[in-house]
Length: 169
Image 1 (cartoon, one colour):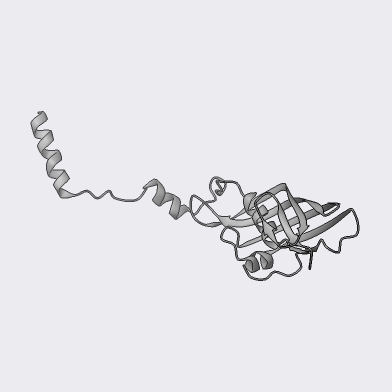
Image 2 (image 1 turned 135 degrees about the vertical axis):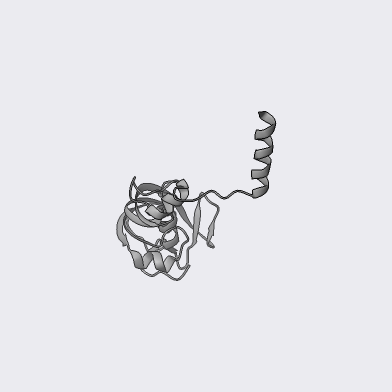
């Protein structure tokens, strides 16, 4: 992942018990993150951070459209995405992530949210994503359906079929 600026949260300097942030993830963001699943998109992300002593609850909501590959024809398509997720974070002596709790070093107390936001959006993509009926690449669909292709068989099989036909008469 390349460095992505503008998506850092200063937890160490947070003085209020609750703050809100908004971001628009654009094509530039997805290109900079350089993830496999999403290359382009326009996604609005809202974040509400609740603080309790040295623990934080980060509530994300997102809504938008990302460009992904169609599972049927492999063409590019726009896929709506939306969802909500929560991250639990606390300040500690060093950075860490055990899957359920993210720890951020007290100094500097900064959490980079760019990869977390990318993963959140990527997990919001349905498992199967295909173009609506009639919008897939017609040439690919035709090949998948086997239309317009002559079926080639091995001549040895043709000889065997003749033998079977003669013995069944």
